[in-house]
Length: 254
Image (cartoon, rainbow, N blue to C red):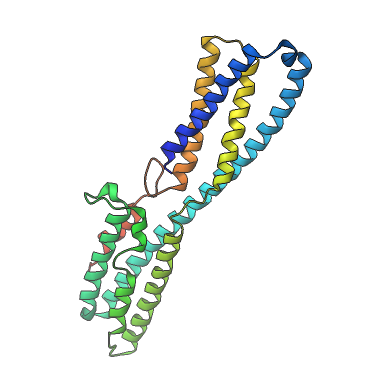
């Protein structure tokens, strides 16, 4: 489910709860809105508000951790790409074809992972599709080193490609959501209840409705940004392709 859809659901539930509270406040019998009733409702809603704050904190921590892990893996892949290319360059002219193919694979992968920067739209799940570093490993295994230096360089290149393959599948496994959706659904319910209580005793005028509207929009915006951070390959908050593109610009140099 997209972040925009979730933001819309949150706004609808929260602002709808506020409007429901106004309707209830106008129609409930007076003894339901006595001072004693208000005290009990305020204490109960304070408990729900505290729990909501804790859940929001958990969602933010989960989304931020997921975002940072994916970003670090991409930067590590960029560094490994440059290191692999330099290692192959040191090996000799025999690796020229391997270097060219590696550049081609990496360029294709970047275009598929960040489709909004490419005319050919694909998706983040492209991380696990198409030609991969395993094709480079197969070519490396076919090399026949002529001296100790080349043997060491071949071993180093294979080690780098192995680490890149591991990072690729790690990123692929992380393309899913890290948000616990039951937490999010319960949180939306709690927020709707809180906003219902806000408007239950509030005067019914344009100023109050405007404030509740802005607050509901702010809450929806906060959850929208949390989900955006959990889906970091597109949208407002996303992992930059700059490190990998910078690595691409360094590949193939003598």
